Amino acid sequence: MPPMSSTPATVNARVFPRAGLDILSRQEVSRLRDASRGGLHDLLRRCTLAVLTSGSATDDPRAALIRYPDFDVQVQQQDRGVKLELSNAPAEAFVDGRIIVGVAELLFAVVRDIAYVSSEIQNNGDFDLSNPEDITNAVFEILRNARVLRSHVDPNLVVCWGGHSIGRAEYIYTKDVGYQLGLRALDICTGCGPGAMKGPMKGATIAHAKQRRRANRYIGITEPGIIAAESPNPIVNELVIMPDIEKRLEAFVRLGHGIIVFPGGVGTAEEILYLLGILLHPQNADVPFPLVFTGPRESAAYFDQIDRFLRLTLGESVAERYHIVVDDPREVATHMQRGFEKVKSHRLDSKDAFFFNWSLKIEPEYQHPFGPTHENMRKLHLYRDRPAHVLAADLRRAFSGIVAGNVKEEGMQAIEQHGPFIIDGEPEIMRALDELLQSFVAQNRMKMSGDYKPCYRLLT
Image 1: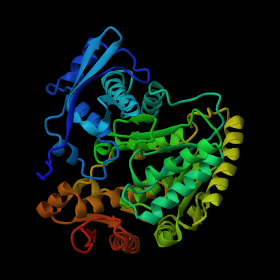
Image 2: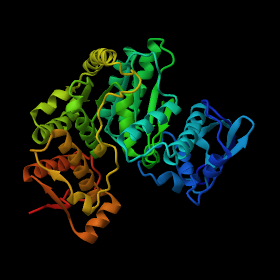
Image 3: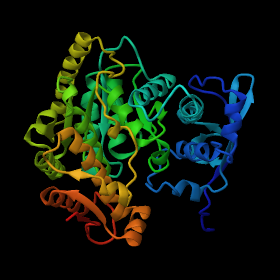
């Protein structure tokens, strides 16, 4: 019997509009086809390939492009709007020569968002993306254009965060929680990838089917730097690609009515600091926002460590903004449901929309990307005499920089060239941060070669 070829099967195909893609202008089509002079073709190619390899187990953003080096996509004008010409596309996205319907829908969501963000947000003089209000307006416009904002619907959207690469017990637990949420007619929004982003959706689909509930929503929110490493899971039926991580995070907290955090890695810890920093702002003190940290009994230590770190750095009162539940999916769902009743009452009293949380105060430091350079890390001030919401922003940045210095190629190269980061902070805070990262390494939640070693020194 001849050996099997390692070359993956590919398909050439034409795909026609799905999911209500709006008509594109000639200029938009031209930019989507152009890989030079600021064109969007490279971005379109990466994102569409990620959708076509939905369900991939790898977390390497380069893997799909290496496996399908000859893949290409072209946007063509036609009478009905646009069509996509796919060359050497992954055969796994097709059945008997026809593209899977859900994959086709997500393909056109990619085209829609890339074109819209470029023409109406980034190259539109109406938006000053250095201005906090304009950033929030841009997040709103992208979500509205994607048609994920629904009026006349009571608060019922649960955002789920957690690791894309988690253990089997943790994954099964996320499905159990999703099942309990689905039984209560709650919809799910995640980062759209595998692991803790897929599990809740998978559990909810069974519960929604049992309840004979239709028009279920499984929203995935991603951004170009993440989608290739975390391809949309097959359950996502509404995909939104935000332009960067910070706008993606703001979309989660503005669109969702509450958040459940499952065990994850360093990215999940950064998301926790992001959210708590917003909730701790004095202007958000009276804004109800149910937040649950949960996992199976086997991963209880993860949230114990997170809880200790948060109390030490941000004060004991920070624990009032979250609820920890261990190994009890039903309690997670009922706590979230009770929280939604408070959200509904508050939105009615404050005349805020159910579909977009305008009332949350989000400071600029939570909206602008942070580059973990030596200069930026030197500007951090990690002291507990600062307001908790301000300290949380700098803790998230410090966390991001230290992780980059240990596991990301560009960060490690910067450390080799310029020496360790210099951080202005309290020794006790930095010791606690190091202990947290060491525990992530021990639990295989932070992938690195060898033991964790601090890539910084304190300012003396």
